[in-house]
Length: 141
Image 1 (cartoon, rainbow, N blue to C red):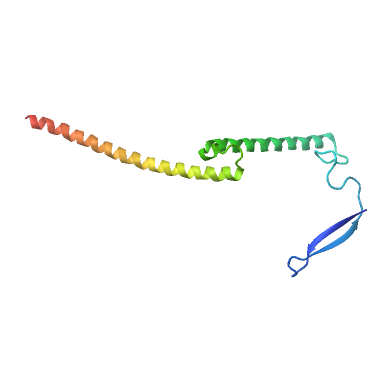
Image 2: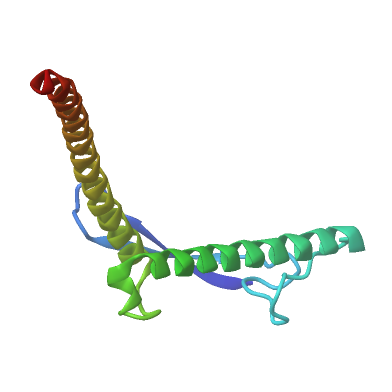
């Protein structure tokens, strides 16, 4: 048997807590964390179940490693973060990446406007050259 202390709020009492002690019987096994690290011992488990859990843990580690490398690749693409080094947090990386994307979108919009303006100017120049070409033979006659 062991003691458990339970904290529960009183109704209408604000932040006041009541501590209540209860006795519980132990029902075999180790309560809390296992001492062996890794997965806690599972009574009557077969080898397939243990292998499945170990495989699941390995997949999770791979997923976190992939996520970390993706954040690192994103950090290297944002010019303001390249100088900071690898000390940038994930939140900072995402915030700066969003800001960089907004700047790139503004630049793209500006370049698109300039391109349209240059196309119009080009078209006008072609029309002027055409008019000049048409006027030249008339002046000779």
